Structures are given as C-alpha cells and as structure tokens.
Length: 509
View 1 (tube, rainbow, N blue to C red):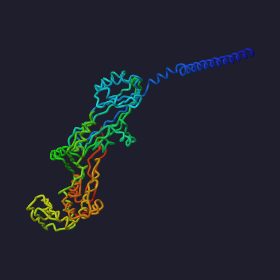
View 2: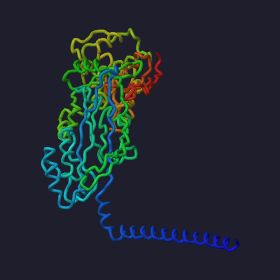
View 3: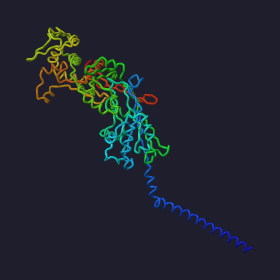
View 4: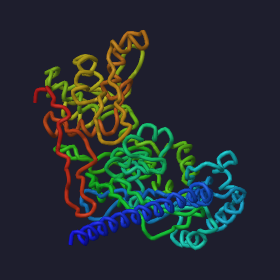
C-alpha cells in the first residue's frame, strides 16, 4: 500500500515537471520566432518597409469657414453673400524627381492656363519644397472633377474650397462694405496669432476690414492618408467642421442709400444721412465709387491697379476720409456762438451791400451787388449772407471764441465711426498760425474762418453731426454702421449696438 502511494506521488511529480518543460519550450520557440521576425523586419526587410512608409503621408486640408453675410437694417435680403468656388494648390516636393514638367503641363491643360504661369509661381529653386502653392483660384466644380479623375497623374496637386465674395449691392455701397482679398505676408505677421493662415481671405477696406474677426469664422480641418501620388488610401478621414462667420446687420437703409446716390449723381463729393437720436448712419455716399466684385476674380490685382491709379481716386471715401472747408454750413456754428455769447442782439440788423472792405481788400458776398440789404441774424442765416458773418465774426466774436465753439461741435476731433481710416479735420487758432507759419493771426483770417473757409477743414460726417447736435440740443452720439450681430444658422441676435454719447456740449441752450 505504501509502495503504490509512493509511485503515485512520483508519477504526479514527473507529470508536473514534464508540463513545465514543454511550456518552457513553447515560450522559447514563440519568443524565438518573434525575435527572428523582428530581425527580418528591421534588418533583412527594413529597406522595403522604409520605402513603403515614405510612400505614405498624412495630408491635412484646411476647410475654410464661410464668411458671414452682410445685411442692411431691414435684414431681409443680404447685400453680401458667398459663391461656391475652389482653389487648386500644388506641393512641388511631392512630385517624383524628374516628373515636374509632365505634371505641370497636364495641370495647366486642365486649368486652361499656360505652363509658364505655374513655372512663375514655382521657380526651379522651390521645386523640392513641401509648401503648398496656390496655382489658381475661382475654379469651378467641373474643373475640380477633371482633376479628381486624373489625380494619379497629378502628384502634389490638391484643391480646397475658396468661396468667392459676391457683392449684391454695388455702386455707392462699395465704400461702406469694402472688399476682401488674400492675406499678405505683412498682414499675416500681425494676425498669425489670431488664427489666420497663409490661405486666409481677409477684409481690406470698409466693414469687411473693420469686422473681419466677426465675419471670418473658424476654419475646419480634414486629415487623411495618401500615397506618394496623392491618391486617398481609404475613406476614413478625420474631419473637424468649420464654423461660419457671424452675420452682420448694418444701420444702412438700402432704399435711402440708393436715393442719396441718385441725388448726388456724378458730382465728386459725399453725402451722409444719420439718425440724430442714435448716431446710426442710414446712408453714406461717396462719388466716384468702385465695384467691390472686381477684386474677386483672377484679374483682381490688375483691376486693383486700375482703380488705385485712377485720377479721381475712387477708393477714397470722401464722407469720412477726406477733409474740406465747411463753407456756409459753418454758419450754424457761428450763429450758435453769437447767441450763446450774447455777442450781438438777434434783431440787430447789419447792412449787406454785396461786399465789405478790410484793409486793402474787398470781400464779396456770394449774392454780389447790391447785396442783401439790412439783415438780422435769422435772415442772415436763411440768406447765408457772408457780410453778416464776416462782420460779426471779426468784431463780435474773434478767433478764440470761434475755435472754441467749433470744437464744442466736435470739429477737429475723431468721430470714432466703425470704419477704417477716418480723418479728423482741423480747427485753427492764432497760436497755431504763429507756431506753424511764424505769422500773426489777422482779422482777415478771422473773416475767412467765420464763413467756413481759410484753414478750417472738416469731413462731411462732421457737418452731419453738427446738425445732429443742434437737433439733440447739445448731444452728439457716436456715429456707427453696425446695428446687430446675428447667428448665421438660427438668425438669433447675438448682440446689438446701443446708442453711445460721444460728446455732451456745455453750450448754454
């Protein structure tokens, strides 16, 4: 009995040892196979795998965000929309050595351009670069389809959405809306940290520039794996969808804008219509104007040069960017100063014989001889009599008071309108003339200033605000073009611009 028990225990012990030996052998064999395979992959077949990996790459495409649309104050029909279009890029470094000319010829034929156009954008010293170069923009979908069908013969070629900006409202709206264009190297240096890239489209003037950050939106990204020829290896790709820019509703009333444009006609100048109680600009016309759509085409740079070199300067927004003598409109400021200072009784009459002599010079009223006759202040303003204001400006006010009241009306100061490039104009003083010209201020200088001439300059918007201040009994509201910011999908109002006091006059009412 004891012997059998011993045999059984010994058998069990031997079986365990056998199993451990077998298991160890299996582990050694598997591990050996793994080592051999690893050795084969890294050493024997390493070059093969290396070539395969080099023939694969991850391509990341930027998906541009649609720019927000722009509406007039009624927010019904957009003034600015987007039109579907594409841009074709070429990464020369992805073209196999020696194949550049073949690829360039084929791509040029599909795009309908000369190969020399591609060569000009990719000179010989850039042909190993892996930076994408835009070959053509404004490419329709039909051409993109042709490229897609021939993509295996077009290594390095890709395309991306690049919508064109379509300005539905043209004419005098151009100075308000502005236009867009490719970002420049100088702009990118400033705006790079704000999410802009070398393919960004940015506002160049007008509302497009002023509110570019709102209109721009947030670009998306698509990551995919392609082989050396640029062929997509699988349908799987990672996409981060772009976010469309915000829609803007302006204070401009398209109907009033069109009527104002017709009223100004083809006379070089500007006209402004604003709401005194809010500072909202209802219309702003400057002539001559330009067509914002001209710069969206392939010939945009040539069109830009034509407009920029035109002698009548269509780019100039004369309503806010140019200054002029206010002329007789300044008599509103003069009348306010005379009344507030009790400088002359309102009913006191001054005779206008059609001219006034000062020193050795005759100053002629616009009516000529025999003049307006005897006029009090009310009739002098109604008749716009120069003799009345020459006399009262020189004898009853003086340049210091005239300058002080001009500044109280906001002249010579920035109006802070939400458009780029506004001018401030200038209000002269006796001290300024002495510093600038080393000459004394003369009575004739005061007379010229009294009728809005001489050194005094303003923008048309300044004079619109002068009238608004009279209507508001001393309050000037900051003029503005933007009314609301809206969600591009839901149309919900995100924010609205509230009236903001720019200046509260201390003139006695």
